[in-house]
Amino acid sequence: MSEREKMVAGQIYNPADPELSALSRQAKHRAYLLNQTDPSDEGLYMRRLKELLPGLGEGSYLAPGVQVDYGIHVKTGKNFYMNYGAVLLDVCPIEIGDDVMCGVGVHIVTPLHPLLAEERVTHHFPDGDHDLEYAKPIKIGSNVWLASDVTVCGGVSIGDNSVIAAGAVVTKDIPSGVLAGGVPCKVIRPLNEDDRLGVYGKK
Image (cartoon, rainbow, N blue to C red; front, top):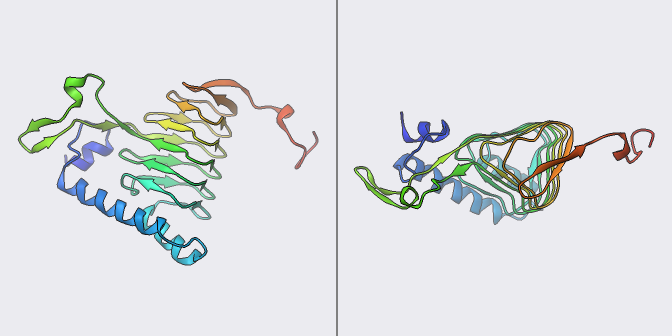
């Protein structure tokens, strides 16, 4: 397996691998160009956004300040929206459904590192000096709202129609149709008819 194949599969890999280093540099350059683009030039902004995130679904938009690891391992459904300061660290795949909304400063981060210091520090390997890294994929269902400053950690799934409250750190799976929040994030309660504002139906 190549180092990229190991990485995407969630295995320990060499982050200094030449192929991965080249892809990372390309992503950083594309993010730089995007974040230097005048958002009022909508055509150029969207072209550069699609170059950075080729798996972006129809009708999707990310406000300026986007940062990624690679960009090419992110796939979204239609009408995905992220506000300012988006971070998508896509060492492993990030899969996002339709009509997902993210507030300011949302971080969706797949990378992980060893917990023990002797395994986490840089080592001397036959292929060069590097640390040990791995990652776990993230899956977010449709119609999810991640409020401001939410962090979604590697290995997590969030079910359809759920809301994650501001500042939450999601370390475990969250089911569909619930309000969840806190550090670590936990289910607060199911969403129900009492939450209806009455805009599209009876209060």
